[in-house]
Image 1 (cartoon, helix red, strand yellow):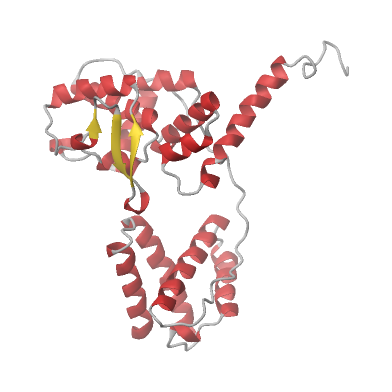
Image 2: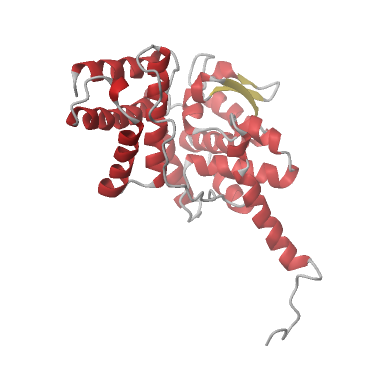
Length: 302
C-alpha cells in the first residue's frame, strides 16, 4: 500500500494496541481489513484517505461479499473496522467525513448459542481422581461454569485476584475493564484443593500449565475436549459453551437479566438478551408438556 496510506493505518493500529488495549487477535483482524481497504484505494490511484468516497467503500464491501464469499458476520466486522478507522482519522484532522458511516452489510441471522443442560454439566465438571491433572482440571471446569468467564479472563487471573473469604474473583475483560464475579461453593472447594496441591503464591497464575506458566487459551480448549470425552459428554465442549451454559442456567433460575449482564461483563444488555430466547424455548417446552390447554388429547386430529 502507499506510504501515506500505510502510515495512517500503522498509527491507528498502534492506538488500538497502546491506548485502547485491544487484544492481539482483534488488532490482527483490523489490520487485515484495513490492508484490503488500502489496497483498493491504491488500485484506484487514491493517495490520501480523505479522497476515498462512500460509494467506493460500499463497492469494496460488496466486492468482498461477491468475490471472496465472506459471511455476513465477516462483512460486518470489516465495516466496523473501517468505521472505527475513519473516526480515528477524523479526530486526527485527516478527514472531514466518515465514508464508512452508512455502510450496509448483510443482516446476521443470529444463532442461539449451544448449552449443556444441568445434568450434562454435572457429568462434565465432576472429574474423578486426586492426581495433579484431575485436581487442576476440576478447578478449571468448576470455575468456568461457576463464574461464566471468557477463556482469556481465566488465563489472565492470578491467586491475588481470588478472595476466598468473600467468594469473589477479580477478572479483566474486554477493553481492559475489571469486574468482580462470584465464585460458587464447588468452585471454591476445587480451588482450595488446587492451591494446597500446587503451593501457589499470590503472584502465581490461578490455573497453571507446564512448568508453572499460565495455561493458554488453546491449552484450556484441549483440556475441555479431553475431559468431555473422558466424562462421556458427547457434545462439542469449548470454553464459551461453559459461559453460555452458566448464563442460561442462571437466567432460567432467577429471571434477572441485569445480574447476568453484570456477571458476564456485557457492555450492552442486548448481548445478554440472547439468553432470554434460550429461556423462552425451555418455557415453551414446559408449557407444551404441562398446560391443560396445550396437551393434545390421545387420538386428537387423527
